[in-house]
Structure formats: structure tokens, C-alpha cells
Length: 295
Ligand SMILES: [Zn+2]
Image (cartoon, rainbow, N blue to C red; front, top):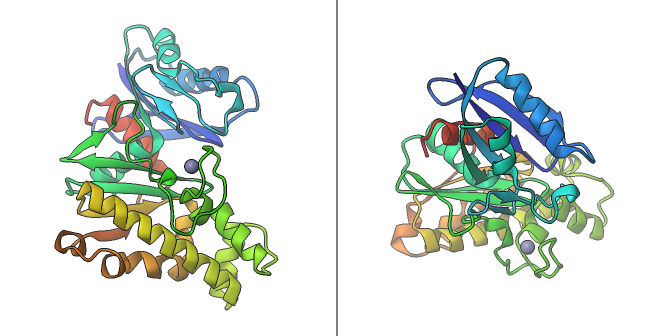
């Protein structure tokens, strides 16, 4: 008998069996195909399950999700734009298995809280900064889902720096200011000629003033929104991960200053903002915890 974890990201699908300590074992991943996404998920799940009967499946999916209905419609998976019934599809693949679905940011927050930078912390906000910005909340040691499973999705909080239209249809979301592509766009408007977040971080490190300013602007904008979210949620720790969060000092200096600049209330001054420890595996770790019923 075995439990499985599945991570449906914007660009890759990952799955693993779940060990006795609720960690993912021997994860496998494939790129998200242009079509046949469910068939690819099903093949991946069957492959990691082998011949073992499957008793539980924990699923983390890129948002938006609707955990009440068991549907997902990740922005980068056009085939599923109108909402794919992922929980039911997994149930029909493994009849009798207990299936749990969460937004990827919530799963990543749970993974960091049990196995990563938030070990032993009851109340934390997870923030994932990459091509988009996601997040999730753990309060009182438990994952917070909200009505539809999207609680903690910090990417669509409005930033004071925001003017652009967001993929969600709103204007000025932090995702349009501080994601990797948003920082690159700002830098290019100001004369930088590189093309992606990795190059931006490298150029900032090498002394490019525009690249450094782009990262500092992104970090400062994130810092404001994080301070607001902390004031709302009263968490003690904020764990920041995702590819663009690896951009070094210029991004992190304003983030580490958050509680001194924007958060003047006593309870906010004690908040710790720390880098995530689990990397891209954090989300699959959260899905494993869901499968093991440790959420
Ligand atoms: Zn938005």
C-alpha cells in the first residue's frame, strides 16, 4: 500500500511516493505538455505507484484552484482554463483512495513549516517569488485554505508601486511589480539589455546600477506587501522562496528591513523574514503531507 504526492505546476508535473515520515520519495517530473495534460499526469502517477495499491493522493496545483469543487485552472495550462476536475480524475484513477487538493503556495508553506525554514513555527506566511508570485498560510500549525482554497495568495495584493494590468484582470498586483518578469521589464525600460531574472541578478552582482535598482525596487515592493499581510495575519515568520528569490542581496536587503520600515507595531517588529530551504521540492513535500493526512 502506498500514498502518492502530485505537484501540478505551471511548467512541470512532479510526483512521488510518500515515505513513512511524510516526505516525498524519489520524485519524478516531466514538463507540462501543450495538450493531454491529464493523460500525462495519470501516466506519471501510475509510474511512481508501480504495482502497489494506492490509499491516498495529495495534490498541489498552481492556482487558481477550487478545493470545494476539486477543480483546478492553472493560468499556464490553457487546456484546463475552464476548470479541470482534477480531484475526481485522480479518484477514478485510484478508486477508494483518499484524495486531498491544495493550492501550490499553500502546500509549499506547509512543506516549509514541517520540513524547512519554518520548522517548529506555528504561524507562518509562505511567499513564492518566480515567474509569478504565490503564497500560502499556516496558522496554529494548520494549513489555512479559505472558502475555495486560495487563502494566502499574496500575488494579487495591490502594490503601491503597481500600475500594470495583471494576468488576473486587476491593476497593480504585486505580481506585476516584483515577479522575475516584472523586474526584468522595469530594468529594460530603464536601459538594461538582458532578458531574464538570472541575468538581472548576475548583472546587479557585477555592478550594474539599473539591475541593482530593479531588484531593490522589487524587494521594497514585496517588503511593503509582506508587512501588510503580516499585519493582517499576525504570523511570526515569513518564508520566501521561488526562483527569483535567489537573486541575492539587492532583492533581500529591503526584505530583511521590512519590520523596521513599514511595520511599526510591536507585534510586527518581532517577525522574521527568512529564505525558504526546500527549493522546488517544497510544494511536493506539502502534497506528501496532505497525502499522509498531516495538514
Ligand atoms: Zn493580479
